[in-house]
Image: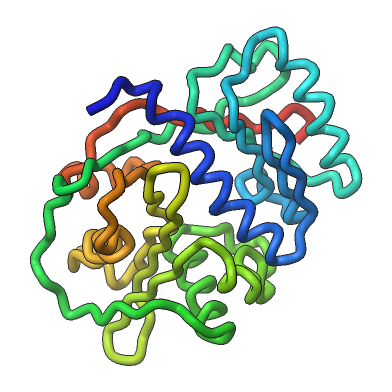
Length: 252
């Protein structure tokens, strides 16, 4: 496997493509600058309003970048979160708060372990009504705060179906219980949105949805893992190659 830093750029650009599609095609304010991509969903949750570095952040660039990003979010007053695939300087001295360091994981072609079969029927999401059900299942499975009022398209507007992200839904009978997504680009296939409803966990659905998102791609697979998902991804054959850094922006 390549050196960890070699995975930073393709993973960052793939994530940027995936999140940009969900923001732009849902009608939210979005800008793609040379060093960072930003989108404002106008939600009172920093994680929803993203700032993704597409280049390493150098210490002497922090103040200038922060000024630009704060000006972008000033219109709505939304909190925001900076994502970095690269090691960052200590941004606390600039007023940021470290939110987490999720594992950055990679599986090379041919190294994915196929889990045992489940009773899950996995389908690709192709219609706006099904995408709305997907969105609600993802929010519930991911643990989106209950105090943020839901509205259709809060994360995935119908326009995202025409973009680069493939949305997959797992059903038991007529009920959607697990979801995932994938985005191909920049020499990798990124796996995202793996989530299962609380009462359906423990049945191998997350593993099944991850493998379904991988599809038959012959590209390296990349993902950012939660703590709960880490042992599942390890069992599937993913290896940790580094850590993303998530920083809540100053003034958020």
